[in-house]
Figure 1 (tube, rainbow, N blue to C red):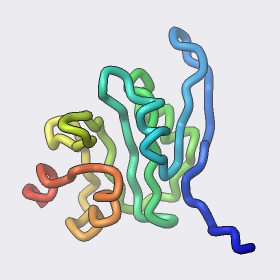
Figure 2 (cartoon, rainbow, N blue to C red):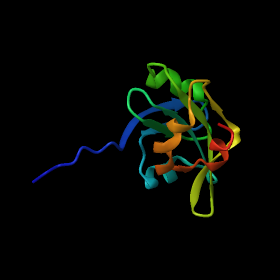
Figure 3 (cartoon, helix red, strand yellow):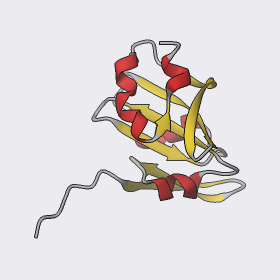
Length: 123
């Protein structure tokens, strides 16, 4: 029997003042993305280092709280909010921030999770 190396995983949870425990998922499945979204919105942090990693979490959580929790090594990253519409999540340039060294080619792997067409037009 062969067991494949799964990249999807529950990453962490922490307690917030108003919402109880919040879950953070690393390279989430569609079901995990639905689980953390509220009214079709979720927050994300995507990075190329250490290895094409996406974290998703509730829109009630501040990005800096998750940055402190996951301790990213630095390098190109993107963060923002994704919205569920017409059967998929999309990233809006209005609600996202991209580090200066995050190139258009860095978005390729994020297409597995999001429609990034609006953002890649700008890069």
